[in-house]
Image 1: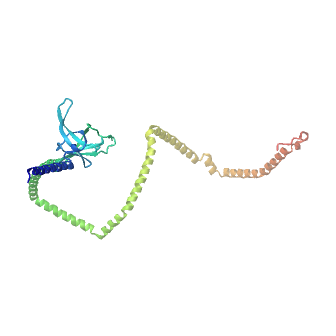
Image 2: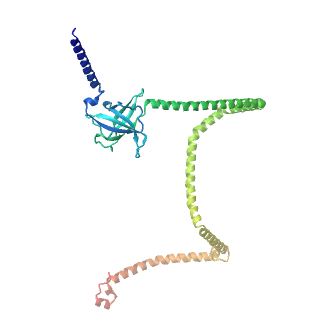
Image 3: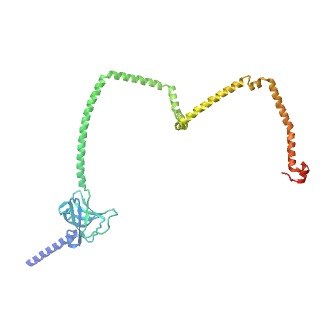
Length: 355
């Protein structure tokens, strides 16, 4: 075979390999800067565990760029602090906005990635993120950190369990000692305990004899049935007592506010009553006396007959005066209507009268 032909074939093979390699590199995005335009942004994190160069950047799970640089942030005096500045190259066709928060996420294997997730805060700006903008990132709790926290908490729990176990051991020892003391006391007072048990049994028999009586049981059942009525009566009684107490309060309240004045009035009324009773007693004595007018009227029969005749005369005189009074009323009425009846003067004046 010709040597030149061999070299040509080898060259073609190398060239094809380079083309295939470049195609694969571009296909899998290992060199995005060679085929895509991008823009650079900076994200500041308090901590960025697992973030290195070439760490993927995603938006809602879709690949949009890679981390190009990870460095410590610097304070106002140019000294490094504990914060981390992550520089990321974002594909030009992928737009990010200021209401999208960048989070550091880690999986169970410790691989980290940057994830842009839209925030629900309506106060955040919806303006797009431009080249050179500096953002504030956040760290999501990774499963590994949760496991580490669980380990610490489990250690604390185990310590607490050990402490509780020691306390239970001490308590069980104290309980055993107390049990021994109780057994010793029971042995010492066994006779007294037996007597108390015998008395309790006797008392129980007595109670059973009382409760077991059918008549007593019937009375108890009747008392239980009558209990609602009794309670109602008690409630009515309490209501009535409340009303009486309220009335008593209304009665005694003026005594409390005007006590001295009321007491003076009561004493004055008592004095007046005493004077009235004295006068009544004197009046009754005079009535009972034979020298009194009423006694003389009751005992003197002649005086009674005179008074009786006088009453009859007055009654007869009244009957006789009735026609005269009627005639006088008719006469006065006629004179009022016809005054000329009184004589010549009345006829001359021709007065029409008052009626």
